[in-house]
Amino acid sequence: MTMDGILFDVDDTLVDTKGAFARALAAVRAEHLPHISPERDPEILSHWRTDPGGYYSRYTRGEMDLLTQRRHRAALLHETFGAAPVTESSFEAWDALFWGTFEQSWTAHDDARAAIDAVVAAGIRVGVVTNAAVELQERKLKVAGLADLPVLVGVDTLGFGKPDPRVFLEGARRLGTEPSRTAYVGDEPTVDALAAHDAGLTGVWLDRAGHRRGPGYGGPAQSGSASSGSAQSGLAPSSLAPSGPARSGSASSGSALPDDALRAALQRDPQDPNALRAAGVVVIETLADLPAALGYGAITDQFGSA
Ligand SMILES: [Mg+2]
Image 1 (cartoon, helix red, strand yellow):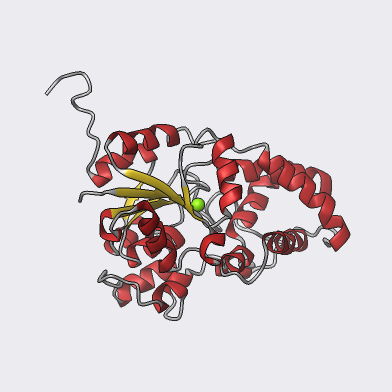
Image 2: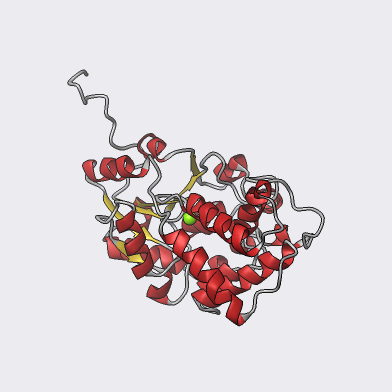
């Protein structure tokens, strides 16, 4: 396959957002959940990244502003871990600590800079399509040393975000490439890779070691006072549901839907690499795998050897 353009997700794809959240949540735990031992930090991080209340999804659908979704997530976190309720006034200090620490922790993944340079060196256009606001992501990329990447589409560009197919198509349009000759690389199998595939792009799932979300990934399963049963629902892949936004548009350009068995496998585990490959998604484990996976930028001639 030959690509004219490659679009990247930002969080946990180029920038180590998980690491930044880990530092922010550890600070919050020490200050606002003092009864919780530091050993449970992985559980807190897992809860945050899984977003069992689905609040970030509501933000990306334009149903809630950024600060409101964060306040709801803070409240659910406190409820889940048996901490004092988050009120309007207590949230102000909570968020100042959380967001302040988060912003100070933005760093690029080790493989990001080289991956971008390889794309550019291969003469392939490159840009960003993200589910956060354009201004925030421009700032984040700048801090992370990736300021040269144009943020083409944010959640505020069209008023909604991934997995809606129109978001990926708008990214390709702004990049100036045909969707069928454009790849989208992201760390979330459903919201990023499968949704991009369904929109007619080549969907690439970056399955970084230790970065999967949910119970069993990145932390022990919640127990005890945890509000059981809600964590898994946060993973419910909206683009797999018959009425989900990625399926409702007319934008699919001929890519086959997974058959029933495949759909069932992905609903059981949306992070099953084999099922995702069978659905047409390209799976890689680091950004260094990207040139080989998409067939560009072979560096065998780097030292003049044939
Ligand atoms: Mg991401």
